[in-house]
Length: 192
Ligand code: B4P
Image 1 (cartoon, rainbow, N blue to C red):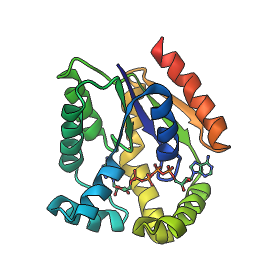
Image 2: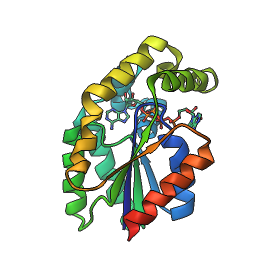
Image 3: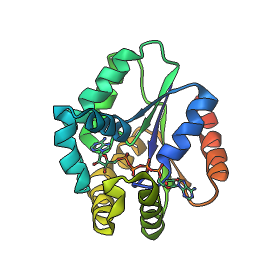
Image 4: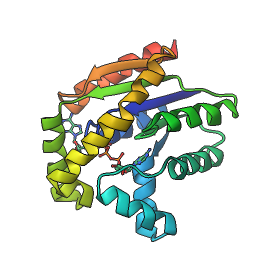
């Protein structure tokens, strides 16, 4: 099984690259951001709780996202593999993911981190906000809060995978196709 974690700050291109990767490798795309926005659209209790936090640029509690991922793994037992996009975002989530996969006799193949500077992230997210109408992309203050949450809580997750020799970082600035080619090169190494 090929199980990839696509990692990087908000706006790094995780969602963009995931779309291309699932086509090439026939993987299931698990984006906790998309799953949470789905709950918000459906107006569930979980969605209502998540919306308040997401609109402020804060992370949603670990237990909520771990539960969502667990359900999705169970619902896709025959998958060739998964792309985890925007998850794990804390070390606690990374530990939980290892346990979930272990219980299914599987494991993470590797993490790929997209490196992009803060100014470019802010520019991309404000640009997306104009079209998507996403409240968390509309306000520079909320964007900076999301980047701070990333630096405080999510960046340490890289070390978790580095300790397992499952970490590769690539430049996330350039054309979407150039970055995709660089990711594919890393995946081919992980597959060996
Ligand atoms: P996400 O939905 O994961 O949002 P994101 O980090 O902004 O998305 P992404 O990084 O995929 O965006 P992309 O680069 O594709 O999370 C939203 C919120 O949900 C979080 O703030 C949090 O509250 C909550 N949440 C989600 N998961 C959680 C978890 N596990 N635990 C706790 N809370 C969680 O796209 C950005 C823009 O850049 C696009 O417009 C794209 O077109 C553009 N772009 C992409 N590549 C480009 C390139 N090479 N050059 C120029 N522009 C590019």
